[in-house]
Image (cartoon, rainbow, N blue to C red; front, side, top):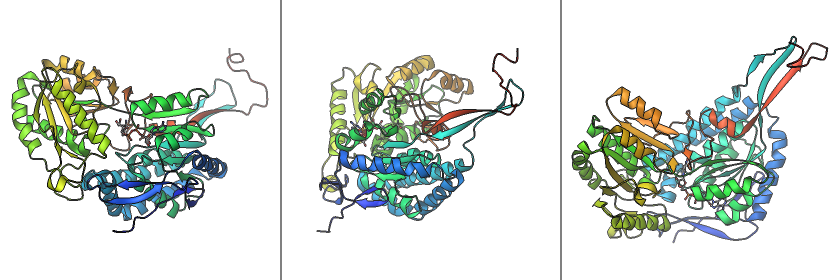
Length: 498
Ligand code: NAD
């Protein structure tokens, strides 16, 4: 048996073991015989040390000129680029998505890091004329302090970079707590930051569970802002932990995203979009297409083209370039998928059209594989049409006309992403205006965000913040409005200029 490597926490510029002396294993979901490493099972004491280090480092990091901070970010992006393939392979091994997609994940880190490095020379504020003579007015961004960064497993490096890069370029310091399924990608990311000259304490990494590491992080009073991506249930807990002392929190949570196919849509294009949207990342994207709302006139024709394509999807180990869809991330995620398939089969009227079973034979024996699954004749009130599944299961909902499609699209608790397939520009704009989500696509599936536009959702998907683009700067900074009176006399706003 190959020796299993032990990885450490990164606190105050040092790789250190947890004081608990405990570790947890990182198991490959495509082949559970493979242990990718032992990681520190940390607790409150480790978190407190990391927060103290970040608090100390903030005193000096906030005073480093932003363009100088950005120089380190540029180096990090270059460095990650050089090892992109290695990081992608390791990410596929620890969380299962196919290699083309993990390459995309690492690419997103590179893109975001370059983009935020550019902010080293921007971070624009406002200057505006005063109502009084000889007085100057401007607004500047100021960093918040220590940021607690809590990430999920589905975009293990990309989501960490979406949060950490804007935080750092603005002069904040960070403590990163990654999901327990993907600690290796977090270690890789942190190592690159260390190698490229990020000073000790500016970025700290503490691995461990939500209850033992996440809880102490969200309740630590020295943390100024928590940036969390994960489930809506845990997001509620983060929100209530920050509320009593008004510490900021930024929440990106679940989705129940829909593609609407109107009666004039280019059907083959829509079929391609539905395949990619529903089964990319094994349906484990927050923006995954979980509902296909289709005009009744096209329902049969669509299924006739869609189902053979679903059947042809190659499921397997994501390291194989020919594979289209990898395993679920874990046994518990797979069980959730299987439970929802059962719920769907029991829903009155819904029809299982393809898939529906766990794959267990031959090459699937040691992994968490499930068939790509499609339910037809789904109605909007069914649980499979309303609840997030986070797996390779999609519900097809036939409706009459665009108005009804938009109504059904909006009628869920979540509001992350939606899309419309139509050739009519008037209908595309109407749908864009009337669908209440944070992200909207025309003639493309619900996935595929780029780093320089705001990313996030409405309703129970988020709490009004956005990450990516310049919107992310608002999460990690506060505005300071500055008035400079050079008149040499007392001047009273709203009074002396009457
Ligand atoms: P999760 O909520 O179980 O865990 C997310 C993170 O929170 C993990 O690091 C976990 O250890 C930590 N955590 C758990 N309990 C905690 C607690 N009490 N205090 C602090 N931290 C705690 O979510 P997951 O299973 O890792 O990810 C899947 C979910 O994430 C899905 O709902 C998906 O939609 C969502 N997601 C949303 C976005 C988005 O941008 N909107 C992106 C990716 C994933």
